[in-house]
Length: 379
Image (cartoon, rainbow, N blue to C red; front, side):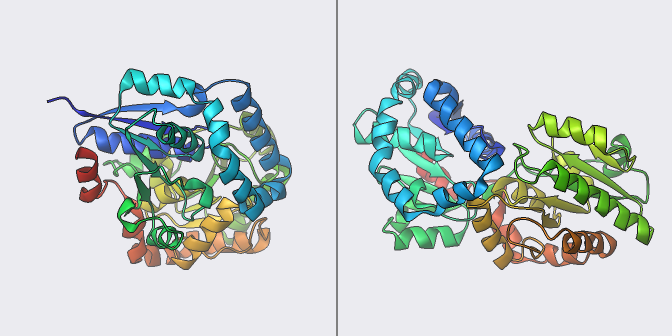
């Protein structure tokens, strides 16, 4: 009997959408589905994709407050609903060709660019595949929702309740948590030594996000130097790993300017599990996937900064659920208070002990889909 074919579409602008797609693919491939993953920006490559991607990154790097307005504006939501299908119609032909070639029974999108294209193809009667949308954050944005969607894979109960209030039938919504890879057995002490961490040394992991966008180089360098100085003053040995994502220029400059044996700048690093396993604290921005991966290792997360818009909304949920250490500021950090928070956690491990007992941890961190979702996909 042939396997049910599932096409999973994502974008790789942010690592989260891609990793969610890969985790979905891993889980479903193990359930006797035939899986194909495709980056919608590569499928529909062209000037529009290039220009919109460049504009998105330019705004987030240099004028993030504009992105905040765009993300939260009711006017933008109204205009987005009005024109998104027209735009998708003009940039859907290659996706349609892919669908005709692969002939999937189910299509799942993990980002709204792909969702818009599939919604248009469904509305136009050009595909009869069942259409699902998977979320990668801890809030809900109305432009993620399409009437053509057959099912939603959301992460938390609050997303489901908000969708129901917006008129989405409850039977279309499945609360799945956020999929991450299962923890693999590892010799943590050997891994520490391989990464240059001596016995008795604490580890702080600092992440700037997959794009390395947000905090300025000067402020990041200042934070790292002051954090190390605080550890030195209290006599606590520490190794600080800095992961700069795809921002190779930032990584190169930090390597040149931070001439400290206790600070290692790694740039883009994979698999992050090697660092999560040995870290005592993770100083990061509140991307949905990276936070969840860290939580799967019961790793305390302190918020270094957040991009205006979606990451601010992620903080709201994570703070309410006590899944992150209480943020010391809304967006840009209060460096002094943040350093005190991180040092105290590394010294005592108090928040980690609380986190291990938090029932919300198991509700968010998942390695498998619910049986009802697998039954839906098999039907």
